[in-house]
Image 1 (tube, rainbow, N blue to C red):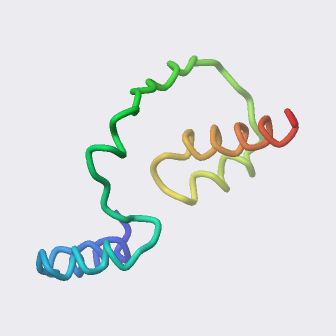
Image 2 (cartoon, one colour; image 1 turned 60 degrees about the horizontal axis):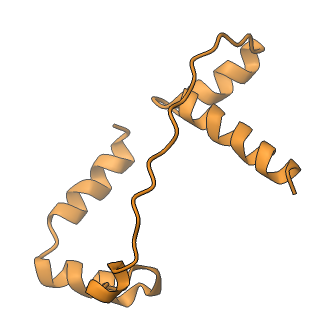
Length: 88
């Protein structure tokens, strides 16, 4: 884990329950939910990914590996965004 993430995690772990609740309720995108919110919820399982062999230019691989672990996931996300943008 990069040092900056460890620092933020350490800061988060030092927060009290009250501070966590205050931070969560002050974020309009993270408001608490109640039972009625989940009444019509359905579980949507992600599709299984398919393994393929793909040849990429070295600079592409280097770019995505600079982000650390999860480079395949990031490559997949970029390709998925491209597909969604061109499917419109």
